[in-house]
Length: 280
Ligand SMILES: *[C@@H]1O[C@H](CO)[C@@H](O)[C@H](O)[C@H]1NC(C)=O
Ligand SMILES: *[C@@H]1O[C@H](CO)[C@@H](O)[C@H](O)[C@H]1NC(C)=O
Image 1: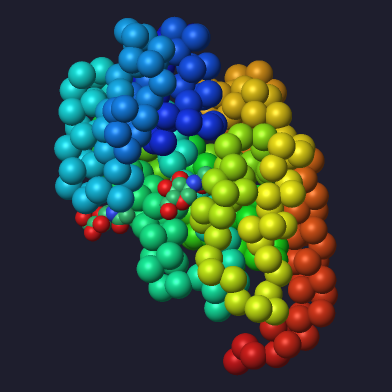
Image 2 (image 1 turned 90 degrees about the vertical axis):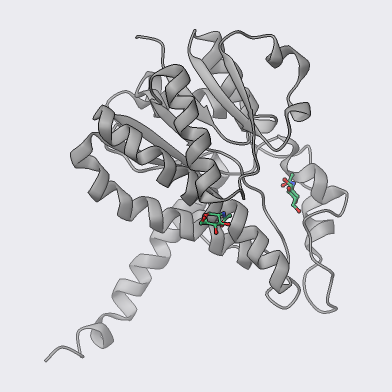
């Protein structure tokens, strides 16, 4: 396979960094973004095929579009956009504030939308491209304790599902990757009380609940990142799955998918007579 040009947001830590490392080790080029250049690990700054870019995912659409345009000029193309930057904010509707809700959507949805919108015209001109959206198990099924985070991932799923139709004729593929709970730093900040809203008496204490999961997460990040690489490139276990939109990762996430199917089946049965009673 010819070397590819990747564009990975939030590539200074977790899945983003591991994916950048993996692609670089295969001889690909990676345009990697982080909030600040100082957030990248030292070794990455020494890799000739790593193009490190400083940006907030919440930057204006114009500045993201300029940054993407400049990257295309430097490398000739972008084969794969990985919208990886994102985080989970926990707490009930009553607990999560207006500002926290907006910031969750700004990072997880509108930031991703701005990068997606900036990259599409270049991929359309190339007549090829792959857009990989990092969603989550909560993009499939809404569990207790994170309704706003869930809503932001449902937004990503809806956007991506609907987008596939308009982009397919241009040779652009869209994939949504839904990791379950992996042993990355995702829960570490939560264990320190970050990204959990003020507690209102009577609701489950998400901070305490989640911190008990830290370091007991079932997902192996190395395997997860290997699969993401394969999904984006249509290789390995993902060979022949280029038309597949959703990829849950992890047994926990697969169980969420099965629970969702059961829920939808039940809806189809129980709500059928009402649904079919309202046509002319
Ligand atoms: C996305 O682009 C719009 C339009 O420039 C801008 O208002 C917004 O702040 C950008 N980022 C987010 C996260 O909404
Ligand atoms: C915690 O929230 C902040 C925003 O308040 C975000 O930048 C950070 O990435 C989050 N951390 C994790 C591990 O999700």
